[in-house]
Image (cartoon, rainbow over all chains, first blue to last red; front, side, top):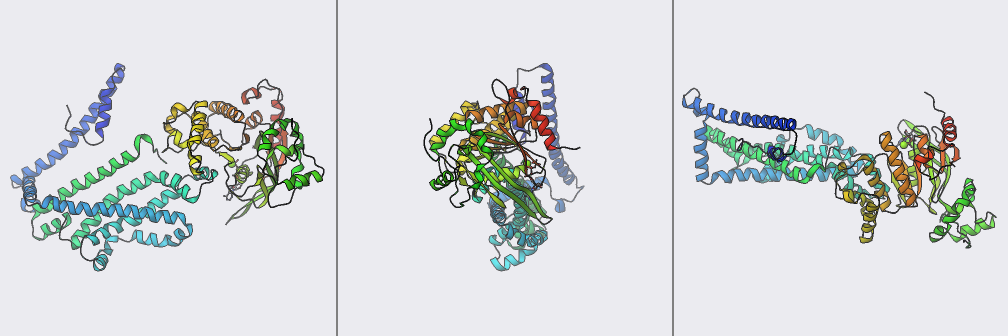
Length: 289
Length: 319
Ligand SMILES: Nc1ncnc2c1ncn2[C@@H]1O[C@H](COP(=O)(O)OP(=O)(O)OP(=O)(O)O)[C@@H](O)[C@H]1O
Ligand SMILES: [Mg+2]
């Protein structure tokens, strides 16, 4: 009955509810209530989305708002279609997504590697602590122009900006995760004569999985910011470029369309990380650490 | 039955200081004659040492024959910015092969420190620890350590948890794998081997932790309040269970506990420590009359209360 409204995540629970049969009436009643509640949440969510766009369209059609400034759903669809026809849709979306994925993967991996190094050498981590704190509070966007001068106006600078934005926070988060690993677990492997590498591989890294995944989630968001700002500054392609260009030539249809694509792409990428997390952290393997 | 010469296995390669091995262990000689044949197989001491002991007229039939852990004048200080803490002072203790020794003492008197020193996780400020005839210089896998909680890794299955020690010591081969499977089977965990720790009860988890320790085939087990994270009922059952396993596997054990009754019910000997700086206050050889020596049966023994009161008074606990 509520098919079509299934939002990611709710699907599994619904199936599970349907499977349970041989149970008492009271329990059936309870399950039914849960099911109805879930369905109403989904319906309400869908309703807000539909109502928002319907209202927008209606107000533009009735000239209550100026669709030259606010654009309008039907015009967004037209813009999408023409972008698609000219082959621009996937090109620009692809460029931005590529830069973002590379940015956040590099940020997470490099940050984790640096965190390992700092975990290894407490001396180094103490020495670098104030620098990390300062760098962490610095708005990394401010470094944009420097990268452009150094690396050149192109995707590399954009990726560099995205990477810098997530790097420091990853280092701090992951290092913190490493340090807060239960000392007794480390003691346990040390009783077997574990070397420092083994302590890292057998205890510290696996216990910090959730922290790293969390960093990944945060970094997706941060990398989008980095990439869009980067594209504002230099690029000749990408959604950020379309937004800036649309703004400059007063083509709000293009701006709105790009923002819409951007929000869908960002949501999908976030769900991708959530999915990755689920795949890695199967069936309660990782309870809270 | 036993006729060889020089089964003395307490030598260290470097230090020629032998005066230490001569104390209370004599009392236990008789009991451990039966383990001598086992001893013969693993002599690691220098022949020189045994000859020296003979010359000194100490004889080879001393209790020292079966000594597997020897702690000599051990002292341990911790340093921190707030100053220096003397955790242990002048601790001397010998544990015989196959013996079960309990250590009780006030909080913070250095019990865990003592176990860490025996396991080679810490280096003593003074004195030395000899395990199986060798001076302890770092973590060695002839010593198995059980901590207060089971610390099974939640990202590993029970089987993967149990082979952790084998992985770390790089001794995971087919024979070892079979042995571990055998242990899991004997102790009723085989069907859970692919489950994750959070799918097991507290008692089963503690048992899995013990098998993880036994997997590397240690000669000595150190149990640091190994049962205290469990509720009282489970605790009695788990203590009974673990005791049975330790005895069946013929392991030597040193148990640290706050529970006087637990210490008496499991041990052949109870060591009472003073408060910080920890020293040894008294040894009690426990001999209880009960049919089958298990912790729960032991609690029924008529002498139980006697030991309990003695140790309670020794601990001198004020509220
Ligand atoms: N790493 C350390 N640095 C400084 N002091 C320490 C350290 N570890 C232990 N101590 C101190 O040494 C003393 C002995 O500690 P230990 O943990 O061995 O005692 P314990 O007998 O096991 O105590 P409990 O019964 O509470 O487990 C304590 O007073 C403790 O504060
Ligand atoms: Mg302790």
